[in-house]
Length: 426
Image (cartoon, rainbow, N blue to C red; front, top):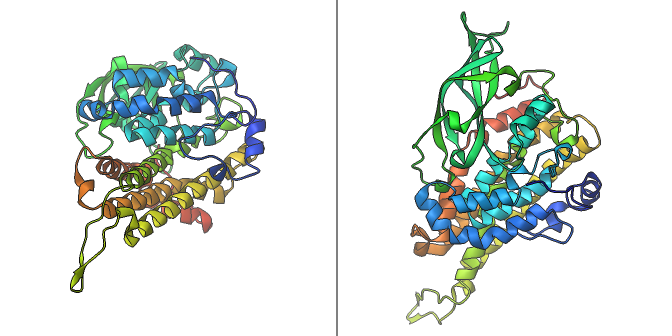
């Protein structure tokens, strides 16, 4: 589904530059779309009732149910980063974050799969343009990912023979393609550089060429269908692969594609939606609910509502403050990086450092928000079908993602201190 380039204030560069003059996180409420926002954000907000209605079915199916996946595709959500030269929206990252946040407010698994499923717009920037366009005649299809190099890519004439088992492929049941991380080998074994670093390759494989193994039995994000995928001796043409180790990696112009790891910037956005949903559901639930009464000295407390308890008031006030701070920090760090890219600049070490630890910090803060609200809610929070139980399970699962490792603070600190950088092996 192609979308026309949005007007000012949506995703056009002029609109983005104007928005960055102010504080985007303060200008736009979570889960809302204004008249100047992208039609994709409007569509995402409009899908919320349908997504909520299907939430229990999504949990039981342990995947995004087909009618929701189809609605997301029709809304253009998976095609948000596709280039305008192909007829795509090329939606700026800050606007993308708001889409994922809005979807996660309705259902965290949907928000997560939306965030993962739109990688193709970024990854095709690392392929020759004609190759990427031929692979994606439909710009709105979803793409799964397993960037960690758990597979093997043996070099053969004109490409690679790929084998391996790749975990955590969120949305694999509704995706057309997957990009899979591999270690490169030849007849002599694993190929390494002069420093002993293995050569890596990311290979595009059609999901129809893979076996999906039903491994996704989890506590949280149950609806993401993040199963293992097995690939057996699949040939991947060299032009349908790329390496993050390639100094000439980027093949497409434009700020959205100028920083090769920009695809990871969106990772924390669903956590903001989860935390927002937790606060909102709690505030709604206590509006008219009577509080537990305690004896006070020889008497008993006067009747009151839950919201009249001071500890509830304190929890809600603190949670809102924590979430507002995390959201503002996220949009500020990523907005600063984006502004540099729009201006044609190179990200500084400081910008890369804060980018690297942003997921860990923001998702961790959202965990604190949800746990605070969960505790304030008392015993009613523990029921599995309740919104707070699901919010807690989902945000804790997000917090375990590899890009949320505490080592990201070490990576960040080394850059800030001018030390030799510590990097992912992708």
